[in-house]
Image (cartoon, rainbow, N blue to C red; front, side):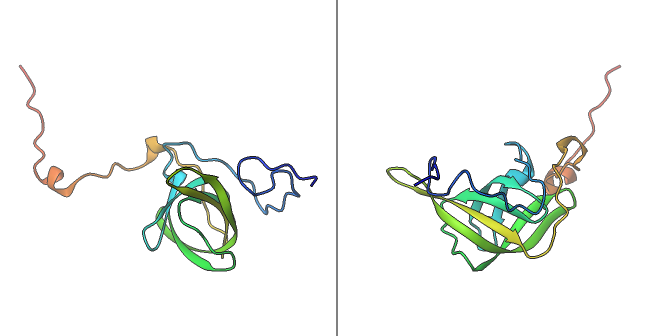
Length: 137
């Protein structure tokens, strides 16, 4: 076997078939996690405008379509995607991790998010009870 496998069963040295540039979101970037429509959360390994490589405890079936909630610079978006591939990536004593590739059904304008420019989301009750600090004389 000429292909070298590293942690998991997906080949690591294959022809690059990517349609766009990918980037790996930082751990605090909202793009670092996505949620399937049914509520399961997946970690994003890397992402582009045409797809994403994701990892989680959810087994994705290649050839099926999934709806993915993504938080991007324009807000939360529901994206339809096709599962291109999925394989067992890691096995621990109590959990199996899968890594899968998603191809978005249409190009999506995703960009790394600068958290400093994002609006602050607040609890409505906290806003209602807000009282400005009194200036000391």
